[in-house]
Amino acid sequence: MKTDLTRSLIETSVRRALNQGGEAPERESRNLVDLGLQFSSGGLQKRILSAIQTMLQDPVSAYYGLVKDVLANTDHDRLMTFGVNLGYESCSKGAKVIRRLEAEGGFNIPWAMALQMSGAYLEKQPDIYESILNQGADLGIRTYLLFSKDDLRAFIPVLEAQEKSAFVLSVWVKQVTDEFVRSLEKAFNILVSVRCEPGYETACAMLRKAKMPYALLLEYTDADRERILSGEWIESLLPSHPVFAFLLPSAYCSEATQREVYEYVLSARQEQRYPAILMEIRQDIMMIDHYISGDTCFVAFDAEGRLHTDKGVLDGEEYNIFHNELKSILRLALRKD
Image (cartoon, rainbow, N blue to C red):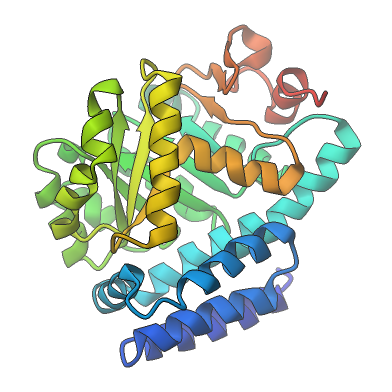
């Protein structure tokens, strides 16, 4: 296999910074951002990292507390693998592929894709998800949001084999068992996202004990609006030490609430209010997509393989990931204006 010298240099530098970060997290946080800017070749990376660089000039930034806690309680190889896959493989190398293919084909390609996995389909077609992820990689897609109500352990070897991709795996509390945590032992490219439901504190404690990075996720509705905007929701999560606090609108959430929530998320990040990285997944994904290719799109496939976009659901075999190739589906559904 051909060695990626740039990735090797990034990994060496990041590992050194992570190992030294416990001594001076403020300094090493700034050094990591400087390192990212040094290796950045695209406008998206430079824009994001420059914003972070400015934010970290604040000596009382809450993010310094996050960095210190993460470095002390998370396996550094996991941090490096997931971070390099997300930052370099996805937002740098993958973005270049996406821009080239979009220009050639005249259709949009998402930089990140959501996928609801089905144990039944995996049992019927053991190679189905490997095929989907390989198709995505060929298009430059290296970041995935994954969901499943089935036994997650069956999917872990498939994800682990995608060594250059970053996976955010959403889990219900009941799915976080000792057996599940052990199945992740060598899967350094996975970030577990625990749903905010009764018992999430115990699930987070199990992941923290195993030194795995994790997030907390709320699928919000209009009824959650006040709790989110007041800061009550994220403040209630902080004792569980998540790296990320994810917000995802439910299918029944009004557009007005989604706009207000995203404005709050942007403000909270800018002001560095909390020692956790707050994200509104749908809006942030589309924002990054805009920076990569000028357009915005959100792509997800449900457990039956149906395509969901920011414009709605597209049914029919021609839009079904189990019946058609990903490139063909995107070409049909996401033509550029």
